[in-house]
Image (tube, rainbow, N blue to C red; front, side, top):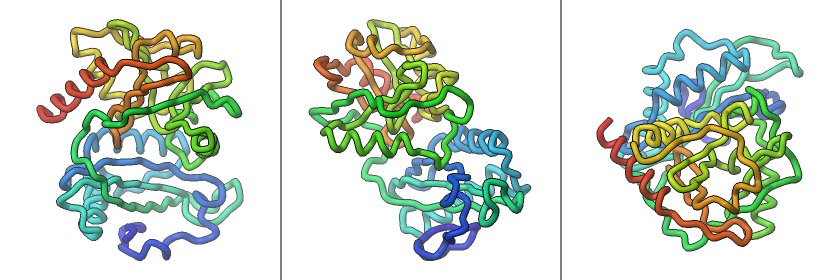
Length: 281
C-alpha cells in the first residue's frame, strides 16, 4: 500500500501521466531507514527535506510539521505490516499535476512507500569482493542543485547500467572539474593513515544524512583527522581505505579499485563507533 497525500491506496493507482515528478523530475525524495517503528535520523531527514523544498521553491504546507510527517510515515509502515521489523521508506514530494516547465499551481503532493529490509542495524559487510571504478561518460555539476535528492538521477542510472555491464559493484562519479565527488548510491570517504578525507558539498556531492553523522563520529573520535577537500582520481590508488556511506547500509567498504586492494580496519572501527553513538542517542 502507498500513502498518497494521507490516503492509503494500492500501489498502481496513485500517479497520473500529468504528474510533474514523472514528466519533468520536479520532485524531491528522502530515503529513510525505519527500525521497529523508529525512523533513524528523522530530524536530519526532516530539516534536509524542508531546506531542499525551499531551494526548489516549493510551497511548504502548514501541516508539514515533523510530527505530522512522522505519523504519516509510521502509518504507512503499519499498513504494510512492517512495524516490528526494519524497512526502507521513500518519502516523495512533488508539485502534483499540470503545467509545462512552469507549474500551474503552488501546491505540493506527497507519497510514501515502504519495503522490508533484512538488517535491523548496521553491520560490517560480509562481501568478499566489492569492486568499483570511475564512471566518466557524464559529470556532476558542482553547485547547490547537485547536493539535493531530486528525481533527476540520469547520471546515477547510466552509471548503474555501466557498472552492471562491467561487473562492478559500484562506480565513483566525477564533477566537471574532474574531482571525485561520490559513489552512485552514497558519499565517499578516503582513508590515509589517521587522516580521513571526504569531498566538500561545494564539489557537488549529495548533502548526505549519513555523511553528516560519519563526520561527527570522526571529529569526536580523538583518533582521526577529518579533511573536507576535493579528491583527485590519482589519490584513490594511494589510499589505505575507501568507503561509501548512506542511511540504508551505514558503511560499505570498497575492497578493490583497479589494481589496488584495500584494507577495512578503519571503516570497521568507524562503523562500531557509529553504532555506539546510535545506542547512546
